[in-house]
Image (cartoon, rainbow, N blue to C red; front, side):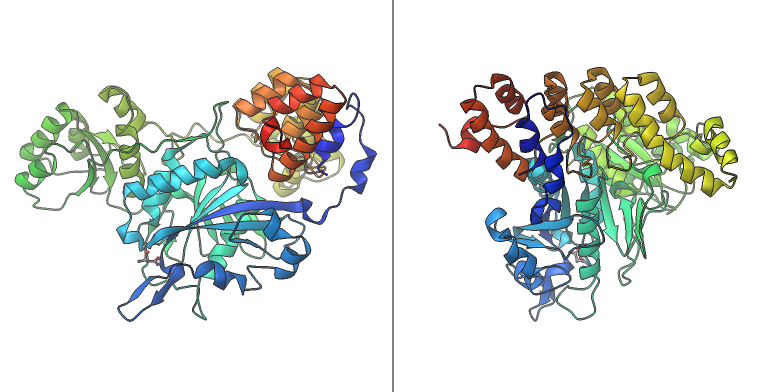
Length: 559
Ligand code: ASN
């Protein structure tokens, strides 16, 4: 029984529950990941005419690989009865939950060179369809157009609060020496065990923001680079997540996928001697938006013929984004040659990769907005796809006098020690502030550069505490500052479980609105609980469970 069922069986539900100590069903430390398998070299075999994807082979093969499937555990815990078809389970890794994963194989499987925006939409729809059933998503994909798909998905997924990790390999997983096993294993661990609420690309031990990458090597295992943003995580001896740069949706809006994309977009790469006719032909209707790949920091030839064509197209409403042909660096108005483009109506694309700029255009142009609004959206940072203006160095907790005084009395002074003290103290301070409903204190902690999703020694986040206390305003504040609704404490409880346990209806409603939901096991427990609450006439308990998303008919078998 999950702690939710136990909590609801208590009367006023505000006492710590001793029965929790007994809570140890084998499978309670599981998280689940959906693997959307679209194709790519990872699952290819050579059938004589070159490598091509082999249907219905990956699941069977993974089933035989002890590093990617623990058959003993599956049998002991009746895994195949509890999860859908094509489910596998990773061996247990150090102190972290088990990752159970289900493979959703597309048909036909594609070489990613054959993928189109319709395929991106299909992946997006599946993430939306299965969003509540899994803790995270892995998209297995070919490497050739992986950077495009990862960029497109990053824009299509609005208010994403779970990890979506795109990966694949350079060598088929069926070969003795291959990179597919490591890439799949790393992506599964990250998607299951960490709440990194972004569309990412995982390759060769590095996790990148999906809209920052580009494929730079056709032969190396180290095929991708993120030229203008350091990796979000690296998997070496330890798994290190750079939480400072992980983005979180700072809104109460629920997750949705916008699958409308505009296909009348293109990339025009300038080269010395490009003719006016080429540029003119490229900009003709139905073209709605182009990524103009210019030189250096965004320069183009000062040719009136070219600039004139660009201006005419821009006046017709074609949106033109300036991105550099350089791998690294950003488009700036440093030179006169760049200025002239902006006079002609071109928008600066900062340090966006052409892949990100193109898919952003495709996403923005499909919106029901005026041309001016679309242009504005194109110059805004939507999903961390470009670097913003630097507004001075971020303050760090180690600058805080309070932390320094503590450090002094412990006689430590180096930056690492101060940071460690800060890391140890802030979650508890933030939880204490959440307990008494002190939003000002929470804001002060946040302004010191601290992450309000950080958990204390029991895995409790400020959102758990505010949910237990029923502090609606604090819950609202925390959600608007990116606190994750999916954090689980040491007892496996989410903030939603806490709000349900303590019967705070408004908090339950707000958390649900922001996308919180019960897991598979909690749903089963809640279904059983509904029945006993009905028998005992506990209408309030029934109402809370219904507000939490438990459907009477579905879970109890009643019609
Ligand atoms: N052609 C393959 C693809 O993109 C390349 C790969 O996956 N390594 O599907």
